[in-house]
Image 1 (cartoon, one colour):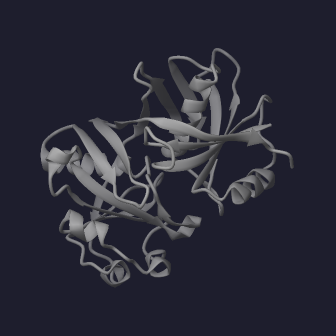
Image 2 (cartoon, rainbow, N blue to C red; image 1 turned 90 degrees about the horizontal axis):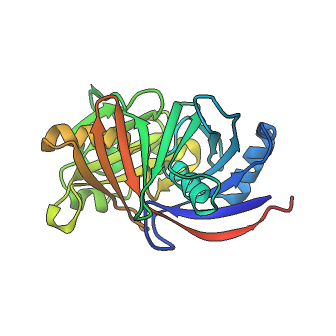
Image 3 (cartoon, rainbow, N blue to C red; image 1 turned 180 degrees about the vertical axis):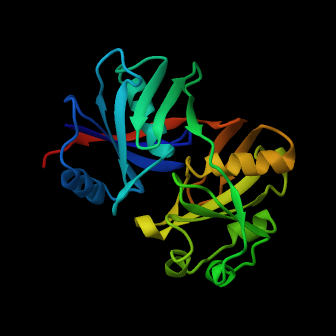
Length: 271
């Protein structure tokens, strides 16, 4: 069985967010315990598993995602990584439809090598700032929002880009304030640098202290910043140590996420 490590939301190796990708030839997945053990062994923020579906249905491939600790409902960067593997190996062309926990997702490849994901837009609900969040983050939020069932994060608006970049949060304490974790965000200090907003994502409740580049978070960040900046098409920079760019486009109940990916490791799963 081939296993690949793909850096997603980047056009160069050793940046963006790495994901494990395994494609199965069968019409089903191995048992959940085995999928979890492999993801724990790979020890990246996500490992994606996919198998082909019969022709004529609503989707072409079934897709699941596991962190080192648990299965999740939605993952953007590992979907991008899977679509990249399907296209780069010739297993798929054009638009690929994935059947996942959060519904049918599509990935469309472009001539420049980039891929556009079509994901559900996160429903944002403003909340009162939870007690303890400012202390856990080390910065006082301007506002906070619940991001709905598929993501399960608390989106936290901070004062400026410098504040987001300088966060050194209490990771364990952050886990008490949402189902998955915290999305911290602020407007770009200088949009002329090629991005409109910045973010960092901390997900202690699924075994990820800080995620390098989070596609699913941008289904919440895109409508949040589109409303404030008055434009539907934006670019977000996730300001982790690896960094990555996500081009976002809000289309009502759907959000388009565009980025590139690079395969950096390909090998054989022996166990």
